[in-house]
Length: 370
Ligand code: SAH
Image (cartoon, rainbow, N blue to C red; front, side):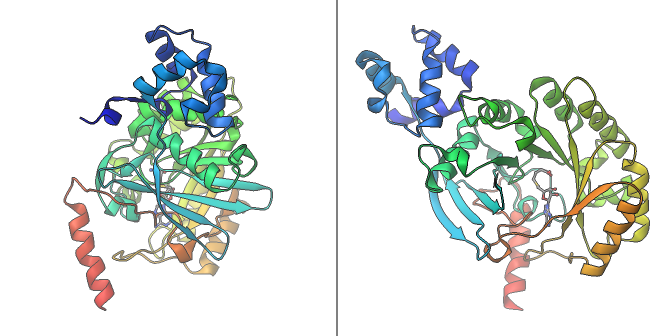
């Protein structure tokens, strides 16, 4: 093992974890606050610049610890202002992180795993298979790097107003690393974002939703994509384990209780698959008693997929049916399509440990040849 590998990456800790770390090395726990301010407010990762820490402590930290964000391996700009970075973690693994500027807000979409184990049939990340979970430092480090790359080393918060865990991976299957990252996003000593400005998106892992509710206050997004179990199973295989009724129950629990929490349902519209007016009517029945929003996402194609995007008129018709039924529904504008940065197009570099990606690569090759 190299010296660096043996050192502890302090990006892996939220405030609670960092306090415990300082105590474990015989230091006072208030040092955690000083360190967090250096990292997240000043963007400083070099211990020797942390002048309020005292020379001895700085030396000790240099020996024991590092502050190591992911490396930016590539950056692409879309004509619409969207930026996509390839962030590397060594060992050949990399994920994609996307910044989407809009009037009055800037949303950063981050990844929680290298690849994804869920194999949703319409998602290109799923098609690549799964390599590993990201650590807390690798998750929050994407935000740290993006804030810096956006040019505000001293106050990234002015650019990034919202963070969504909607990149690669299923965040609730990596709960132990994701939770401290959420806490750093919320914490004033970290990025100081309000609860409704941090969104975790899940394919519907019911026990994870329950754990999240007990752990931290953030906005929840649920990838629904179908109003009934038979169809949903073909799109989101996880539905076999956690069918819609159970999922709805956990969403209802999530929004009830003392916090004023919200849930958004994501529904990717796929031509001839889940975009019939009957599906829209079923969706109204399913969601009308649950305080929620519906986000309709036009399907983004990727090489090798058998699905197509619903035609514009059908998307409008779907939206007007659900709205007439009393739901609040928006159609997500596709952003960054020219740089493959749209929903479901993130691929990164996944050292697939399943066989799935091999099959997909063959299909992609065929698509290129044709
Ligand atoms: N695993 C989490 C987060 C990642 S996906 C989840 O399932 O929610 C983020 C969103 O993009 C999900 O709603 C997902 O279903 C959607 N998505 C995936 N592939 C897509 C595609 N090809 N076109 C449009 N949306 C897609």
